[in-house]
Length: 150
Image (cartoon, rainbow, N blue to C red; front, side, top):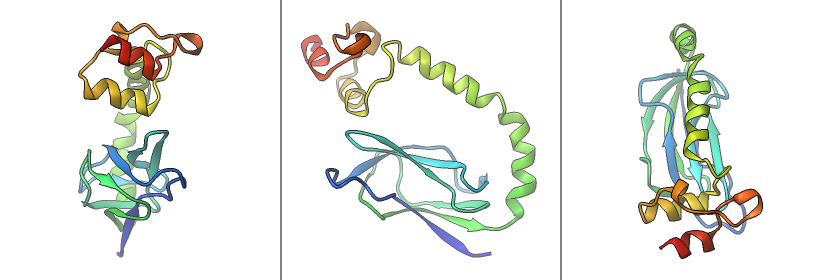
């Protein structure tokens, strides 16, 4: 069994750094190839970082909220077939999870999808997006809407 580094993907040229938004797995969890391990957020986009192989998440080196740059090591994955048995048992219980997660995110974002920059601005000021009237296309929130609300 060998260890594989989990790296920040190449960021767009206009973006110098990003932040670790959400780890979907904890150290010791079994993972399958192409399963999303972590989400990285920039001002413009949220990037999903998938597992490069089946195995076990060995270590998380950058916690949620940490600022990272292109190709920086986020964690380590221990390759191996041991994930196969564990993940098949877990997959049965996880089948309802994506639907529940999607429903929850739709309820949170009643003004369509919020851009990462708007989500960050709302979080910085501890605001409730549903209390702000959007003036963008389709009632979407804009930076100006949030700033007016302040």
